[in-house]
Amino acid sequence: MLEETIAAIRPADARALADARAHQDRLTKPPGALGALEEVAVRLAGAAGTSPPPMPAPAALAIFAADHGVHAQGVSPWPQEVTQQMVANFLAGGAVANAFAAQAGASVTVVDVGVAADLAPAPRLMIRKVGYGTADLSQGPAMTRAQAVQALEAGIAVARALIADGARCLITGDMGIANTTASAALVAAFTGADAAEVTGRGTGVDDDTHALKISVVRRALEVNSALLDTPLSTLAALGGFEHAAIAGFVLGGAAARVPVILDGVIAGAAALAAHAMSPAAVDHCVAGHRSAEPGHASALTHLGLRPLVDLELRLGEGTGGLLAHPLVCAAVRVMHEVATFDAAGVTEKPQ
Image (cartoon, rainbow, N blue to C red):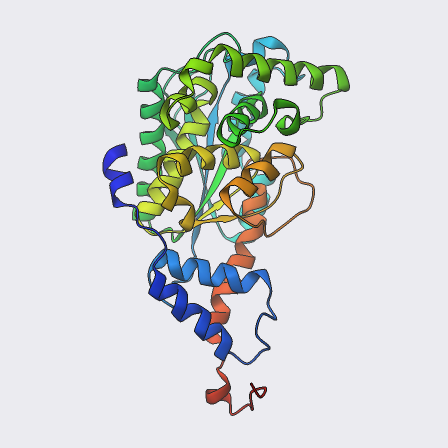
């Protein structure tokens, strides 16, 4: 499934990009007056292969949940069982992601790819468990290559299922105590940045714990150095099951030419892996926001993505992506509904 999906991904269509830019210049507004929104609309036209692009609605949020063996190193003050508890909160509709999804009119699906407990079946819960949490990445590889492929293909399968159900935009979400530590390791490995530069405070750790996180990330990069030779083995060595699943989710959306709105640093780290496997996959992505986590800025710079929202968010769950979705829809609606100078009888600025 992974090879088939990567083979189906096509880069942005050059003709659609040119048509979209030309159409933007004919609309009744000064050229460039809508700033970054114009580039979003052009980007989605290139991804879809047609201008104007289809409306990116309805949207579907997938929250991939998993636990991390590196939690044992004390990198988070939160107990590991919070991952399972927050899954229950998502399913009950009580999380911030649920509130933002209701505002955006997006569906919410929770995917268990590696929670360290057995979850009871529930509506909107998909069980795609690869394992009961990863191994401790500071002591060796977090996953085997086979587990990484299984998680990648779980993400692809979720993307395909949501698109088959009618989703025309995918939004990445995550839940996993200690997953910002794994994210920092992935960002450092894929971008070449120093661990101290990309390791943040996650859920709000103190100075001592932050210093510990940096040292753990450095140790992970050192002990796994021989494994960081291919995108897949790097993902397996340093990532979480949710990182791999989100990478697959991105690849699945790209293969279907359905836009993917990325959330924060966990999604950014996963997108780095997807990009390394298929550079064209990022042509189908929009950066929903810039997280307060420093590694996210490094990831977005490496991916060449400009975030739409910068509100110092550091929650995850898909919250930043959900906030950005109405902006993405507005950018595309302009292409469909705003009159051209000729159609409106408005005189253009002399060239």
